[in-house]
Image (cartoon, rainbow, N blue to C red; front, top):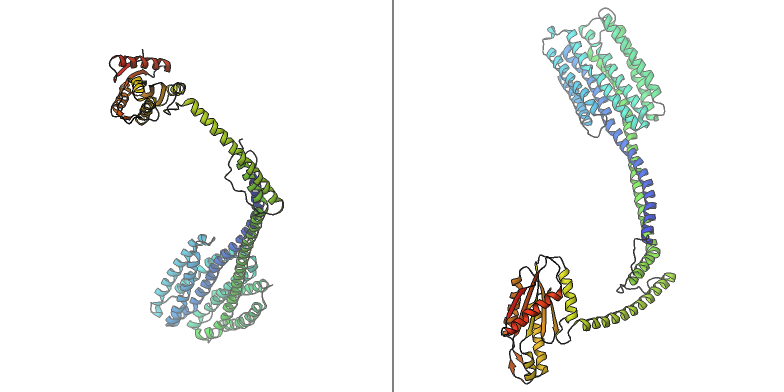
Length: 580
């Protein structure tokens, strides 16, 4: 009975398909949630990277503005190298931070800012070199217009830095819209810091030279004051929804710089517009005006700190969501797997095991063990029935084995010579036909060796039939030992034996006959009476090419004729020939 296990889906396979489908849907939903949280976390990380660039760009703008007054004092009054070096070191430090941020390979917008950054650094280097060259000239040879061109060149990088800050701010807002107001206020404060520094520097040439402001200087100061007023009007609305502490800082900025500081500037402008200028030194200007600028920096730094806190909070929140979602997905997967394993163990596995046992028993494999008392209820009854089926099948197999044994014994008795154990004539001819029809192998000839014991009748008459049987058995054993396993050996009747073999050359058959002849000459038979004697045999070897069909009867007849020819020629001889 043949059972095809793939003909129908097993319970286990169906269960696996159902489980995989269900788990696939659950896993897909979990992966979508995890992917959404990952995107949020990635955006928060990107916002943090771009915020670093924004912060560094704004700080660099402030530091470049901070170089203006020390350089003006150095050119106009001499000295102030310590203050100038400190201002330049602060600028270089913020430039280095900006470089680090722009070189972050994970920053999406930074690659587009590489070229502007190179231009900024080159412009700063050239402007400093130009101003330092002016500073090395004797004071009488220093031309104010040249110095102002150098200053204009230095501060020309501020719009580029502002553009870089705007690009980064756009990226930050795109990833985290909650910081939009903070970033707008910070950029406006940075511009306010720049115009505040520029405003103070516009008075320095007139104060150093103790003269009145020129018309161009007065116009420039008025223009700067107008821009400062515009920035004040823009910063206020941008702070809606921001923390009270930041709005308080702006109130102090409004009171300190935008009111008191600007009032001082207006007073100074009025004094500096008179003939002879204002009786105020640059140092007095710095002492009264610079502290008010510090309020702008404090406001900007507080604003950026709040934006940084918001970005970090968003990053931590998205990371927590990502980890929490992943942990939830893992927990659900583990719980689902545990429940599925329990269901498989209690429900599916017993039926799969029972099916396997039934198929094995039905296919004749009775070595399988039927579990006892491992399950409960109906499942235990099922395995009890399988055990009964196995017992019935084992009894059936035992009966079939006994039947096959008896049939095998009958077949051996029908094909085997009972005395020698060799094939009888009918079995010999049947096997010979199979061997001759086999087209495999590289043998070119088939040969039959017929051998007959010389004077066998005399052996029986002299020593008795029991001894004669010993001679026949001894000859049969010699044939088994000498012939190959694929050769067909049989006792055709009485003392006559035959061997069929396939050879590459006819001489190989004769060589086998010679080995048998030599073996017989060395044989000694002990008679029933205790006497010992030897015996010989005559051989007839007939061969035929396998290029055409061979009739075994013809080959046997030819070998038999050669055998009797050997008998007639004196016995204990080998006669050979080809089938005509």
